[in-house]
Image (cartoon, rainbow, N blue to C red; front, side, top):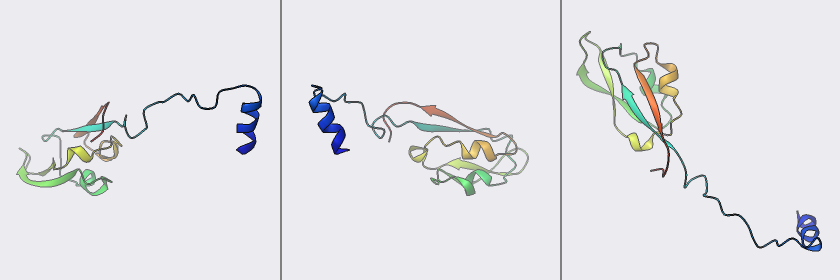
Length: 102
């Protein structure tokens, strides 16, 4: 590590000019969650396995009589798509939103 900076100085490279790129936190993407309530059978997989607790079960019923989840904290969604991957009915999906994170 120290040897590299000395080597760079000895080769005439300017070590102070560094390309500034936005930090990962500054360009973090997040997700927007969409629920297809009529497909849902209330298995709760999306709620139980969400690492950021974005979803909760609601008191509402769909036309089949199942309790459906609802989004309670979309700003916490990191676009991991865990809910989408685990849903056996394909009743939930996440769309990535690029730009400033929450």
